[in-house]
Length: 234
Image (cartoon, rainbow, N blue to C red; front, side, top):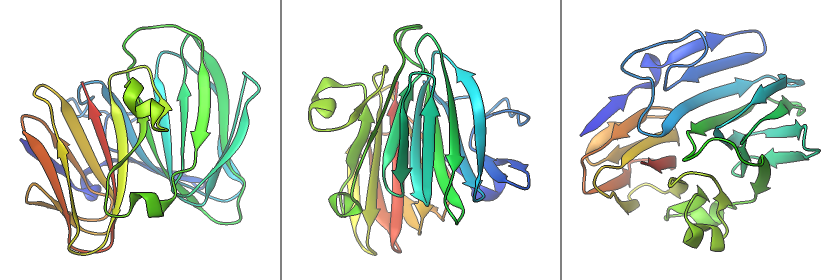
């Protein structure tokens, strides 16, 4: 089963500093059919204007993955961490028992991000933040695991999260394709950061999403130069 979620159908919030589109119910947007997808709770498509951002605010019991599509995001938190994550790279904040953080676009251009929240396996635990570089050349024509709750993926460089889930990305040229095996009972979600591609034959345009379950596998075929982000969650 594949449910296409066109960009124009997403929830929205527009302010002078932030244009947000919500793949799932979030803040003032509520759709009872789009509350979560398995353990995947939030997928926000944010455009943050220069010299603005999210002031300090608390989180707990959530795995928060930020995939930077353009520009850069600067993070600061109550654990003393501070870091700047640039386009194509990823940061993970495992909120655990509680943490306060802020995220700002300190650049001279708008920053675009996907912010993905995954419900952890267990509540509590010590908070964690980390970031990693994932050069687009490494993702050319192949899915690369960016964040994962599986030891094997972490040993190969994926950032850790507290759930049996994966966040993957790929860049594809026209005519290229990638395949991903989907275990029965899992929930997959694909978003197209840019370009046009077919997911098991369903065409997605730029910034569309697709909720996938009860499929033996996923084949993504690029019809244009494309950038894909995929979550596989229980």
